[in-house]
Amino acid sequence: MTVVPRLSVYEPLAQTAPLTRRLAESHCAGCAWYHGFWPTLRRLGMAASPDRHQDFFLDALGGLARAGHRRVLVSGAADSSMLAHVLEAWRAVGRPDVTVLDRCPTPGVLSTWYAQLCGVEIATAVADVVDYAPDEPFSVVCTHSFLSQFAPPDRPLLIAAWHRLLGPRGAVVTTARLSPPGTDEPIRFTPAQVDAFAARAAAEAERLVDEDPAEVAAAARRYAERLVVHATFTVAEVAGLFEDGGFTVERLDQHHVGGALGPGSGPATNQPATHLQIVARRD
Figure (cartoon, helix red, strand yellow):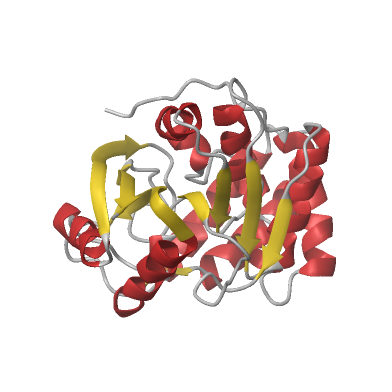
């Protein structure tokens, strides 16, 4: 059964989608096919983004906010959605001190625009998280489905970076998609899945008066042809990764997400995917 989250986080996707396409043209270096198209995919209901885990993020981050945590790192961002959830989680207790980090400038520029829209200030950084060296540690690291961007042998480097970036008793709040048994590694769309993905994007774009279905289909095809993610198979695998990296796993819940379109999760049929919702505390 797919759990539908409450919709309380402000995300003006009708504004964000065209703005991001323009930003990606001038700020992305080879990744405009991804960053530029991501908010449009979200408008089409074809992307599993933080809003599909809204209850989890608001609960986990809100608890940390009420406990006095303030300095927050968004570690990898496709757009401004993770920032939106952070600001909502802290809204009742005061503004957090947020840095949005990504290797590409586009998410940071978009997040700055969103923050200004909300009347707050944030910091941004353009760097690989493994190399990032801030002046002071953070108390919270949060991100959505970032583990799948790292091949399994490289994931300990990510966990080590998060451990290094957090102060004592700092926490990671994140999600990870579980891949079905037998999934190839790395995961890519098949040619048939590319065709189905583009066709569905065109069909979904028909209901949006400000999108050209043919242009959307072409962008969806470019996205599906280029996307590569990496498999995560078991709960024990994820738990062991954090525990070996110096964390205590406080929460590891399974959550079924509808519309999680991507290779290995049913891009043609919109089958639900199983995600892990993770809170891990730095030892």
